[in-house]
Image (cartoon, rainbow, N blue to C red):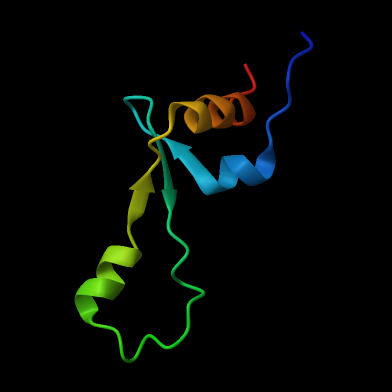
Length: 68
């Protein structure tokens, strides 16, 4: 077994790597309150996955997620 960086489990659970190598995460909307006065369109948009844009963030997160 080679020595390497361990996978950060909390990060691995929150972020998923797509087939093309992009990182996506689910927006935190399930824990929100007062949803009754929000439109269905708003609730539907907030519940979807979001893509990361910053190169530095992506580079740091990929290092935490992968353990190879």
